[in-house]
Image 1 (cartoon, rainbow, N blue to C red):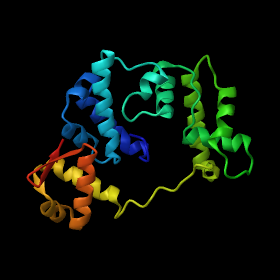
Image 2 (image 1 turned 90 degrees about the vertical axis):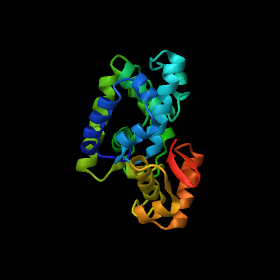
Image 3 (image 1 turned 90 degrees about the horizontal axis):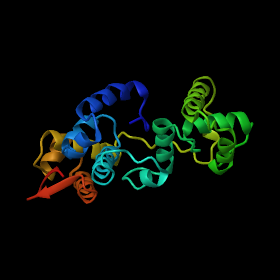
Image 4 (image 1 turned 45 degrees about the vertical axis):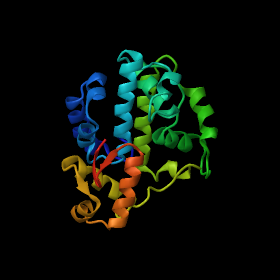
Length: 230
């Protein structure tokens, strides 16, 4: 939920989401439309779909228990190495080196002076060398809090990373079109391309293109020219 979304916006959504889906069994058995409705406003709806699919896999293959290995976690939909490592660190207190934006900021600030274009491959060995193997959870909390502090008091050190990119403009983007369509179809399923173009205010050709992509990705089902959540 925190990807590209500020903490104050996430907290009420997080609490409401846990209220609606208190465990993996409830999430796995929920309709995708319910999950998307609870996620609405956070953006990146693919994360909500992947989260539900991951819950389904955890229930079906792991007896409802989240796997406690990198291999098990990365086999779940939507989870790569960095996310798996963070789950292991914070949920299982396992010392697995990883890099995220705040950690990156700390190491660039402390170890690389004014250098530019610093790759993560140069940072990761430093994380491995300094990681507290006795209490990795607390260590990561501290490092990430320090990174947040640096960003609030200095020009963001992560801008000197080789991997830094500016987020693309949301207004008028296909992300905006997709999000608007999913919200509209979740609330009022069974609308046609023409009706959705009218209700969302986007051009019919962009609406049709977004609907086709969402159907291909498994978000939507088309029936007689109208769309509903899969």
